[in-house]
Image 1 (cartoon, one colour):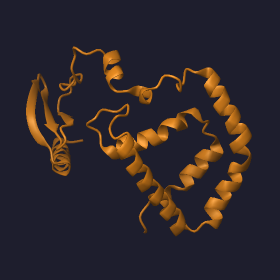
Image 2: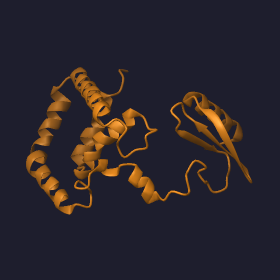
Image 3: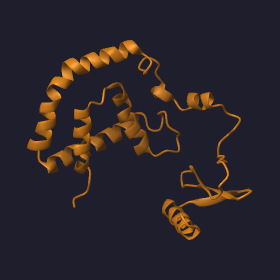
Image 4: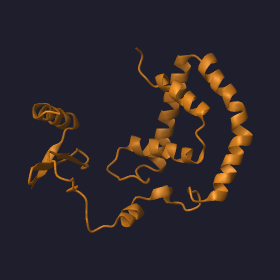
Length: 185
């Protein structure tokens, strides 16, 4: 990216995010600017070509301490990827109770249910889930509190999916349904 294009990009990014510049760090071959969004989250723009060092990180805190503060695994210890017995049970239930009929559901949902109804169900489900998440969990998930409530909610919704195998059939179905959330052409 040429310097003129980079300047345009940085100016457009700064105006889109409504950032306020708070500090600048000078390096040998450029400078690093730290901006803050309206809710206080840092946004770093580095114009240097030397190795990046994040000026907003606290070097006194170890990564383990940061992980303890973030409430990873939603604060519980039983349901983790290291629990092999639980993973075996989830896989067994998935194979016995879900995989044999999911192709029928995928076909019915894709071919028989009108797009307008699928959109209605998708948006109504998200609004209901988001309200419940906001009331019950809010920003008490494994993410930094400066992230948006929507980001916290979608991360919590997707958290359980890491225990279920993503088969090619499931991936094809998921990708074929992206237009359900897209606006009308």
